[in-house]
Each structure stands twice: as C-alpha cells, then as structure tokens.
Length: 258
Image 1 (cartoon, rainbow, N blue to C red):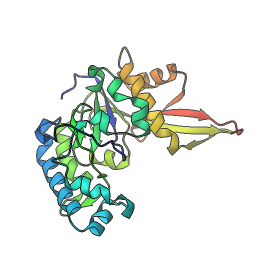
Image 2 (image 1 turned 30 degrees about the vertical axis):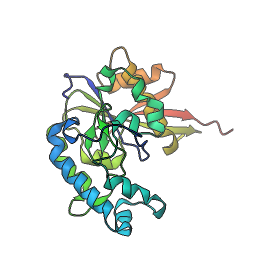
Image 3 (image 1 turned 135 degrees about the vertical axis):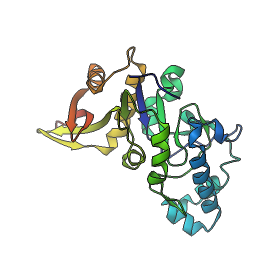
Image 4 (image 1 turned 90 degrees about the vertical axis):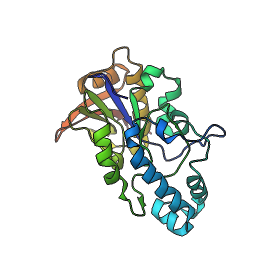
C-alpha cells in the first residue's frame, strides 16, 4: 500500500487483548500488507512458535506473562493453523471500541496501519490470528524486537504527507517517519490551571480522534488542521510543539466535584 502524496496516515497501536476468530482459513503470511516484510515476519513468527512450545516458565518470563496466562502459549504455538480474521475484528480494547474500524468505509480503512510486534504492521483488512506478543518481549536469538523491525519498516513504509501517530513508546521506537509531518494525540485533565496526563482516558481519546479524522469529508493536511477538526467536535484542544514534535492535546476540565 502506497498512499497518495499528502494523504493522512493513521498509525494505531495493537491491542493487548484480542478476539480469537472462531472459524476461518488460517494465516497467509505473504498476503499481508507490505510483503517485503515477510522475511522478518517469518523469523519472528518462528521464534515465537518455538518459544511458546517449549518450557512454559521460560516462555512466560520472556513474554512477560503470568502463570494465569499460560493458555496464551498454546495459542502462540499454533498460529499457522489457527483461524484468521480481519485485524479490525481481532484487535479489541478501548481504542478499537471507540474507533469501530469495521464500520468505516474501505477507503478510510486504507489510511490506517496497525503496528505489531509480530507482523511489523498490518492493514485493518489483513487476516491474522489472535496472538500474544508485545514489542517489549525478547525472543531467543532475536534480541529487542523494535531494533529487529526498524530497518525493514524504514525501507517499506510510506514517509510523506501527514502521519497521526497514536502508538505507544515501544512501537514508536520500531519506526518513526523522518520526512513526514508527525503529530501525536494526548489527553490531559486540567484543574486549577494545572494539567495532568491521564492514561485512563488517552486510549478512548485516540480512538475518538482517529474516527473523526477518518470520517472527515476533507482529510487534514497538517497538524493544525487535525487540531481544527478535533476542536470542531466540541473538544477543548491545544496544539503543542516541543523538540521538533507536535501533539494535539485534548483537555478535560476537572472542577473538583467528581
């Protein structure tokens, strides 16, 4: 997928929780977006399968899972034969509940890429199985996943126009556009003139903002137009610039009565 010049690209994080498809054909690795990523996908997938099929204690530690999540290992070990479904249906959680990707037109979904420690990136319509792997995990002989993915993502992904980056830190470390204008979205509460970042609101806020941008009749061309669109929805917004990075900050007022 190559976007037209100046088209807005929405970068989403994966969700920790996923809905496992109940039925469907299995994964076709070569059919995922950006087939040039297939060699790295194959190596990461093979390492995850081998780790998950081995000693449970070692696998749980490497994947930062608890003993109650041991069932995730069996799922990871059978990824090639497990049913697959569109990524827009597999990824769940607050951001995806607010965004409602499957309801959006195909043309809007084409402007979305979902970051993944296992696949690098996928499009919403790419068919994948449910899996458990975070970018912070360390697979045997692969080292840090962000560093493993960085050269391949840099060579494959579009780097132009406007990128609205809704990913978390470990996924940002795997690939950051160099030429495109990048804008993040943050959420704050303000009380008595003091602003505090609110992690429990940021996922919902990012889902809402992504939906606004993807539904816009005229897609935004720069950070200022992103802020204008979000502000026109009735939200209080500030456009912040610092150290070369831009962010659209959504402000929630706290009057102290809650």
